[in-house]
Image 1: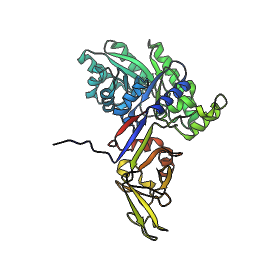
Image 2: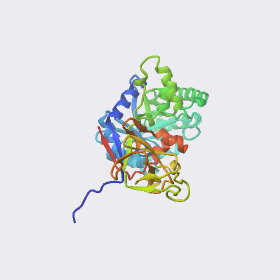
Image 3: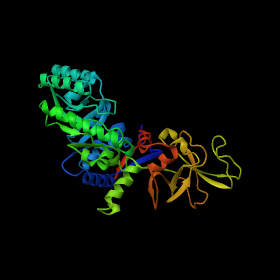
Image 4: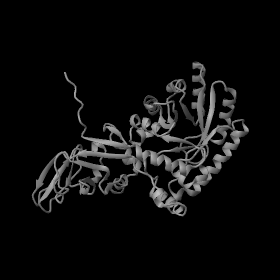
Length: 392
Protein backbone atom coordinates (compact mmCIF):
# COMPACT_ATOMS: atom_id res chain seq x y z
CA UNK A 1 0.00 0.00 0.00
CA UNK A 2 1.33 3.43 -0.94
CA UNK A 3 1.99 5.70 2.04
CA UNK A 4 1.13 9.37 1.79
CA UNK A 5 2.24 12.19 4.04
CA UNK A 6 -0.99 13.72 5.27
CA UNK A 7 -1.33 17.44 5.83
CA UNK A 8 -1.96 18.61 9.40
CA UNK A 9 -4.97 20.71 10.33
CA UNK A 10 -2.62 23.31 11.81
CA UNK A 11 1.12 23.75 12.20
CA UNK A 12 3.64 25.73 14.22
CA UNK A 13 6.61 27.56 12.75
CA UNK A 14 9.79 28.16 14.76
CA UNK A 15 11.83 31.09 13.46
CA UNK A 16 15.61 30.68 13.41
CA UNK A 17 16.01 34.41 12.78
CA UNK A 18 13.96 35.25 15.86
CA UNK A 19 15.88 32.86 18.09
CA UNK A 20 19.23 34.21 16.92
CA UNK A 21 18.06 37.74 17.65
CA UNK A 22 16.88 36.76 21.14
CA UNK A 23 20.11 34.98 22.00
CA UNK A 24 22.17 37.94 20.83
CA UNK A 25 20.06 40.34 22.90
CA UNK A 26 20.07 38.14 25.99
CA UNK A 27 23.81 37.57 25.88
CA UNK A 28 24.26 41.33 25.72
CA UNK A 29 22.00 41.74 28.75
CA UNK A 30 23.81 39.01 30.68
CA UNK A 31 27.28 40.28 29.79
CA UNK A 32 30.52 38.64 30.86
CA UNK A 33 31.40 34.95 30.69
CA UNK A 34 28.32 33.44 32.38
CA UNK A 35 27.21 30.16 30.80
CA UNK A 36 23.89 30.49 28.95
CA UNK A 37 21.76 27.49 29.95
CA UNK A 38 18.60 27.07 27.90
CA UNK A 39 15.66 25.87 30.00
CA UNK A 40 13.56 23.50 27.88
CA UNK A 41 11.20 22.07 30.49
CA UNK A 42 7.54 21.53 29.55
CA UNK A 43 8.59 20.36 26.08
CA UNK A 44 10.60 23.54 25.48
CA UNK A 45 7.74 25.71 26.70
CA UNK A 46 5.47 24.21 24.07
CA UNK A 47 7.99 24.62 21.23
CA UNK A 48 8.73 20.88 21.35
CA UNK A 49 12.09 19.52 22.45
CA UNK A 50 12.59 17.38 19.33
CA UNK A 51 12.48 20.46 17.11
CA UNK A 52 13.88 23.11 19.40
CA UNK A 53 17.10 21.44 20.57
CA UNK A 54 18.71 21.11 17.10
CA UNK A 55 17.62 24.67 16.31
CA UNK A 56 19.10 26.05 19.53
CA UNK A 57 22.33 24.12 18.98
CA UNK A 58 22.54 25.53 15.46
CA UNK A 59 22.28 28.98 17.05
CA UNK A 60 25.15 28.23 19.43
CA UNK A 61 23.49 26.92 22.60
CA UNK A 62 25.42 24.11 24.29
CA UNK A 63 23.79 23.76 27.72
CA UNK A 64 20.21 22.69 28.45
CA UNK A 65 18.13 22.30 31.61
CA UNK A 66 14.97 20.25 32.07
CA UNK A 67 12.62 19.37 34.90
CA UNK A 68 12.58 15.58 34.71
CA UNK A 69 14.48 12.51 33.58
CA UNK A 70 11.88 11.96 30.88
CA UNK A 71 12.57 15.38 29.43
CA UNK A 72 16.32 14.77 29.69
CA UNK A 73 15.86 11.62 27.62
CA UNK A 74 14.14 13.65 24.89
CA UNK A 75 16.98 16.19 24.87
CA UNK A 76 19.54 13.38 24.70
CA UNK A 77 17.74 11.92 21.70
CA UNK A 78 17.29 15.28 19.96
CA UNK A 79 20.71 16.83 20.46
CA UNK A 80 23.07 16.90 17.50
CA UNK A 81 26.16 17.88 19.47
CA UNK A 82 27.64 16.94 22.85
CA UNK A 83 25.58 19.56 24.67
CA UNK A 84 25.27 19.28 28.44
CA UNK A 85 21.99 18.34 30.12
CA UNK A 86 20.93 19.23 33.65
CA UNK A 87 17.86 17.88 35.48
CA UNK A 88 16.46 20.51 37.86
CA UNK A 89 13.60 18.53 39.36
CA UNK A 90 12.16 15.05 39.31
CA UNK A 91 14.20 11.89 38.82
CA UNK A 92 13.31 8.54 40.34
CA UNK A 93 16.03 6.67 42.23
CA UNK A 94 15.74 3.88 39.66
CA UNK A 95 16.66 6.36 36.89
CA UNK A 96 19.76 7.74 38.57
CA UNK A 97 21.91 5.07 36.94
CA UNK A 98 20.69 6.10 33.51
CA UNK A 99 21.55 9.74 34.23
CA UNK A 100 25.00 8.88 35.57
CA UNK A 101 25.83 6.63 32.61
CA UNK A 102 24.79 9.37 30.18
CA UNK A 103 26.75 12.04 32.08
CA UNK A 104 23.60 13.99 32.86
CA UNK A 105 23.94 16.21 35.92
CA UNK A 106 21.03 16.58 38.32
CA UNK A 107 19.97 18.68 41.29
CA UNK A 108 20.22 17.14 44.75
CA UNK A 109 18.15 18.91 47.36
CA UNK A 110 17.94 16.39 50.20
CA UNK A 111 20.08 13.67 51.74
CA UNK A 112 17.92 10.86 50.42
CA UNK A 113 18.65 11.79 46.82
CA UNK A 114 22.34 12.44 47.49
CA UNK A 115 22.79 9.09 49.20
CA UNK A 116 20.86 7.31 46.45
CA UNK A 117 23.17 8.92 43.88
CA UNK A 118 26.24 7.75 45.81
CA UNK A 119 24.92 4.18 46.09
CA UNK A 120 24.06 4.06 42.40
CA UNK A 121 27.41 5.48 41.35
CA UNK A 122 29.24 2.84 43.40
CA UNK A 123 27.29 0.05 41.71
CA UNK A 124 28.11 1.42 38.27
CA UNK A 125 31.69 2.32 39.02
CA UNK A 126 30.97 5.80 37.61
CA UNK A 127 30.92 9.21 39.25
CA UNK A 128 27.68 11.19 39.53
CA UNK A 129 27.65 14.92 38.78
CA UNK A 130 25.31 16.90 40.99
CA UNK A 131 24.22 20.47 41.60
CA UNK A 132 23.55 21.26 45.26
CA UNK A 133 20.27 23.14 45.60
CA UNK A 134 19.94 25.17 48.78
CA UNK A 135 16.76 26.42 50.42
CA UNK A 136 16.72 30.22 50.61
CA UNK A 137 13.05 31.02 51.11
CA UNK A 138 10.93 29.54 48.33
CA UNK A 139 10.12 26.58 50.60
CA UNK A 140 9.89 24.09 47.79
CA UNK A 141 13.13 22.12 47.46
CA UNK A 142 16.67 22.64 48.73
CA UNK A 143 19.02 21.83 51.60
CA UNK A 144 18.55 23.68 54.87
CA UNK A 145 21.66 25.05 56.58
CA UNK A 146 21.99 21.97 58.80
CA UNK A 147 21.14 19.61 55.94
CA UNK A 148 23.83 21.20 53.83
CA UNK A 149 26.44 20.56 56.52
CA UNK A 150 25.54 16.87 56.51
CA UNK A 151 25.56 16.77 52.71
CA UNK A 152 29.06 18.24 52.65
CA UNK A 153 30.25 15.47 54.96
CA UNK A 154 28.74 12.85 52.65
CA UNK A 155 30.45 14.48 49.66
CA UNK A 156 33.79 14.55 51.49
CA UNK A 157 33.46 10.85 52.30
CA UNK A 158 32.70 9.85 48.69
CA UNK A 159 34.82 11.94 46.29
CA UNK A 160 35.25 8.97 43.97
CA UNK A 161 31.51 8.50 43.47
CA UNK A 162 29.98 11.97 43.48
CA UNK A 163 31.21 15.33 42.23
CA UNK A 164 29.45 18.56 43.14
CA UNK A 165 29.64 20.70 40.01
CA UNK A 166 27.13 23.41 40.85
CA UNK A 167 25.42 25.35 43.63
CA UNK A 168 21.99 26.84 43.05
CA UNK A 169 18.71 28.12 44.38
CA UNK A 170 15.41 29.29 42.90
CA UNK A 171 14.01 32.79 43.33
CA UNK A 172 10.44 33.29 44.52
CA UNK A 173 9.22 35.61 41.75
CA UNK A 174 11.87 37.84 40.19
CA UNK A 175 9.37 39.13 37.63
CA UNK A 176 7.51 41.22 40.22
CA UNK A 177 8.76 44.13 42.32
CA UNK A 178 6.41 42.90 45.05
CA UNK A 179 8.96 40.14 45.71
CA UNK A 180 11.94 42.50 45.99
CA UNK A 181 12.58 42.05 49.71
CA UNK A 182 12.11 38.28 49.57
CA UNK A 183 14.51 37.96 46.66
CA UNK A 184 17.08 40.25 48.25
CA UNK A 185 16.97 38.08 51.36
CA UNK A 186 17.21 34.91 49.28
CA UNK A 187 20.33 36.17 47.52
CA UNK A 188 21.95 37.09 50.83
CA UNK A 189 21.23 33.61 52.20
CA UNK A 190 22.62 32.04 49.04
CA UNK A 191 25.83 34.03 49.43
CA UNK A 192 26.21 32.74 52.97
CA UNK A 193 25.66 29.15 51.84
CA UNK A 194 28.23 29.63 49.08
CA UNK A 195 30.78 30.82 51.64
CA UNK A 196 29.94 27.82 53.84
CA UNK A 197 30.56 25.46 50.93
CA UNK A 198 33.78 27.21 49.93
CA UNK A 199 35.12 26.73 53.45
CA UNK A 200 34.43 23.01 53.03
CA UNK A 201 36.71 22.93 50.00
CA UNK A 202 34.15 23.43 47.20
CA UNK A 203 35.15 26.85 45.90
CA UNK A 204 35.01 25.96 42.20
CA UNK A 205 31.30 25.13 41.88
CA UNK A 206 29.27 26.84 39.16
CA UNK A 207 26.93 29.14 41.06
CA UNK A 208 23.55 29.87 39.48
CA UNK A 209 20.41 31.60 40.70
CA UNK A 210 19.31 33.88 37.84
CA UNK A 211 16.32 33.07 35.66
CA UNK A 212 14.91 35.11 32.75
CA UNK A 213 13.37 37.72 35.04
CA UNK A 214 16.44 37.99 37.27
CA UNK A 215 18.85 38.81 34.45
CA UNK A 216 16.76 41.92 33.78
CA UNK A 217 15.66 42.88 37.30
CA UNK A 218 18.56 41.62 39.44
CA UNK A 219 21.72 41.83 37.29
CA UNK A 220 23.92 41.24 40.34
CA UNK A 221 22.44 37.73 40.52
CA UNK A 222 24.11 36.79 37.22
CA UNK A 223 26.87 34.49 38.47
CA UNK A 224 28.64 31.62 36.67
CA UNK A 225 25.56 30.31 34.84
CA UNK A 226 22.09 31.64 34.03
CA UNK A 227 18.99 29.52 33.52
CA UNK A 228 17.04 31.28 30.77
CA UNK A 229 13.56 29.99 30.01
CA UNK A 230 10.70 32.13 28.68
CA UNK A 231 12.89 34.99 27.39
CA UNK A 232 14.76 32.89 24.82
CA UNK A 233 11.44 32.09 23.16
CA UNK A 234 10.71 35.80 22.75
CA UNK A 235 8.51 36.60 25.75
CA UNK A 236 9.12 38.90 28.69
CA UNK A 237 8.61 37.24 32.09
CA UNK A 238 6.08 39.99 32.87
CA UNK A 239 4.93 43.33 31.48
CA UNK A 240 6.45 44.96 34.54
CA UNK A 241 9.84 43.48 33.66
CA UNK A 242 9.60 44.72 30.07
CA UNK A 243 8.61 48.27 31.01
CA UNK A 244 11.19 48.50 33.77
CA UNK A 245 14.01 47.33 31.53
CA UNK A 246 12.85 49.52 28.66
CA UNK A 247 12.85 52.55 30.97
CA UNK A 248 16.36 51.81 32.20
CA UNK A 249 17.76 50.72 28.86
CA UNK A 250 16.30 53.56 26.79
CA UNK A 251 18.74 55.90 28.47
CA UNK A 252 21.64 54.01 26.91
CA UNK A 253 20.42 52.71 23.56
CA UNK A 254 17.59 52.75 21.06
CA UNK A 255 14.33 51.27 22.33
CA UNK A 256 14.07 49.23 19.11
CA UNK A 257 17.12 47.23 20.20
CA UNK A 258 15.60 46.39 23.59
CA UNK A 259 13.18 43.78 22.42
CA UNK A 260 12.53 40.09 22.30
CA UNK A 261 11.18 38.45 19.16
CA UNK A 262 8.51 35.75 19.27
CA UNK A 263 9.97 32.47 17.94
CA UNK A 264 6.66 30.63 17.55
CA UNK A 265 3.87 31.20 15.03
CA UNK A 266 0.71 29.06 14.90
CA UNK A 267 -1.14 28.76 11.60
CA UNK A 268 -3.90 26.82 9.83
CA UNK A 269 -6.24 27.26 6.87
CA UNK A 270 -9.90 28.14 6.36
CA UNK A 271 -11.92 24.92 6.38
CA UNK A 272 -15.31 26.09 5.09
CA UNK A 273 -17.56 29.13 4.66
CA UNK A 274 -21.15 29.72 5.74
CA UNK A 275 -23.69 32.53 5.67
CA UNK A 276 -25.77 33.29 8.78
CA UNK A 277 -29.09 35.11 8.51
CA UNK A 278 -29.86 37.95 10.95
CA UNK A 279 -31.02 36.46 14.26
CA UNK A 280 -29.39 33.06 13.70
CA UNK A 281 -27.44 31.52 16.56
CA UNK A 282 -23.93 30.49 15.63
CA UNK A 283 -22.47 27.18 16.78
CA UNK A 284 -23.34 25.35 20.00
CA UNK A 285 -25.79 26.91 22.39
CA UNK A 286 -26.91 30.51 22.45
CA UNK A 287 -23.66 32.35 23.12
CA UNK A 288 -23.70 34.37 19.88
CA UNK A 289 -26.63 35.59 17.79
CA UNK A 290 -26.03 37.20 14.41
CA UNK A 291 -27.16 40.83 14.47
CA UNK A 292 -26.90 41.09 10.67
CA UNK A 293 -26.32 38.87 7.68
CA UNK A 294 -22.88 37.41 8.38
CA UNK A 295 -20.27 35.49 6.46
CA UNK A 296 -18.49 32.93 8.61
CA UNK A 297 -15.24 31.02 8.19
CA UNK A 298 -14.78 27.73 10.00
CA UNK A 299 -11.24 27.04 11.21
CA UNK A 300 -10.04 23.48 12.09
CA UNK A 301 -8.61 24.36 15.52
CA UNK A 302 -10.25 24.10 18.93
CA UNK A 303 -9.59 23.70 22.61
CA UNK A 304 -8.19 20.18 22.11
CA UNK A 305 -5.33 21.83 20.23
CA UNK A 306 -4.75 24.43 22.93
CA UNK A 307 -6.88 27.30 21.61
CA UNK A 308 -8.63 28.41 24.82
CA UNK A 309 -12.38 28.02 25.05
CA UNK A 310 -12.32 31.30 26.96
CA UNK A 311 -11.57 32.96 23.60
CA UNK A 312 -15.17 32.30 22.56
CA UNK A 313 -16.73 35.55 21.26
CA UNK A 314 -13.72 37.65 22.32
CA UNK A 315 -10.64 36.23 20.56
CA UNK A 316 -9.31 37.05 17.10
CA UNK A 317 -7.38 35.41 14.28
CA UNK A 318 -5.73 36.93 11.22
CA UNK A 319 -6.97 36.31 7.67
CA UNK A 320 -5.72 38.34 4.69
CA UNK A 321 -3.81 40.51 7.15
CA UNK A 322 -6.99 41.55 8.99
CA UNK A 323 -8.22 40.76 12.49
CA UNK A 324 -11.30 38.52 12.44
CA UNK A 325 -13.32 37.97 15.59
CA UNK A 326 -14.13 34.54 16.97
CA UNK A 327 -17.91 34.18 17.08
CA UNK A 328 -19.74 31.43 18.90
CA UNK A 329 -18.27 28.91 21.29
CA UNK A 330 -14.82 27.46 20.59
CA UNK A 331 -15.37 23.73 19.99
CA UNK A 332 -13.08 20.80 20.67
CA UNK A 333 -11.74 20.77 17.10
CA UNK A 334 -13.16 23.86 15.40
CA UNK A 335 -13.95 27.52 15.83
CA UNK A 336 -15.84 30.06 13.74
CA UNK A 337 -14.77 33.59 12.83
CA UNK A 338 -16.57 36.57 11.32
CA UNK A 339 -15.29 37.43 7.82
CA UNK A 340 -18.30 39.50 6.76
CA UNK A 341 -16.24 42.61 6.04
CA UNK A 342 -13.40 40.74 4.36
CA UNK A 343 -13.64 40.19 0.61
CA UNK A 344 -12.39 37.14 -1.20
CA UNK A 345 -11.97 34.68 1.66
CA UNK A 346 -11.87 31.11 0.35
CA UNK A 347 -11.32 27.64 1.81
CA UNK A 348 -7.59 27.01 2.04
CA UNK A 349 -6.66 30.60 2.87
CA UNK A 350 -4.05 30.96 5.61
CA UNK A 351 -5.24 31.72 9.14
CA UNK A 352 -2.81 32.99 11.78
CA UNK A 353 -3.73 32.06 15.35
CA UNK A 354 -0.48 33.34 16.90
CA UNK A 355 1.91 35.42 14.85
CA UNK A 356 2.06 38.13 12.22
CA UNK A 357 0.25 38.51 8.92
CA UNK A 358 0.73 41.76 7.04
CA UNK A 359 0.81 44.64 9.52
CA UNK A 360 -1.26 42.84 12.16
CA UNK A 361 -0.13 40.47 14.89
CA UNK A 362 -1.82 38.13 17.36
CA UNK A 363 0.41 37.78 20.41
CA UNK A 364 0.47 35.14 23.11
CA UNK A 365 -0.09 38.04 25.48
CA UNK A 366 -3.44 38.72 23.80
CA UNK A 367 -4.50 35.18 24.69
CA UNK A 368 -3.40 35.77 28.25
CA UNK A 369 -5.29 39.03 28.66
CA UNK A 370 -8.54 37.45 27.51
CA UNK A 371 -8.18 34.13 29.30
CA UNK A 372 -6.34 35.34 32.43
CA UNK A 373 -3.49 32.92 31.71
CA UNK A 374 0.24 33.61 31.80
CA UNK A 375 2.29 33.44 28.60
CA UNK A 376 3.79 30.27 30.05
CA UNK A 377 0.37 28.61 30.39
CA UNK A 378 -0.77 29.48 26.88
CA UNK A 379 2.42 28.11 25.32
CA UNK A 380 2.58 24.82 27.20
CA UNK A 381 -1.09 24.09 26.49
CA UNK A 382 -0.60 24.07 22.73
CA UNK A 383 -0.94 20.42 21.72
CA UNK A 384 2.28 18.47 21.26
CA UNK A 385 0.57 16.67 18.35
CA UNK A 386 0.69 19.81 16.20
CA UNK A 387 3.73 19.61 13.89
CA UNK A 388 6.54 22.09 14.52
CA UNK A 389 8.63 23.19 11.56
CA UNK A 390 11.74 25.37 11.60
CA UNK A 391 11.70 28.33 9.22
CA UNK A 392 14.52 30.80 8.44
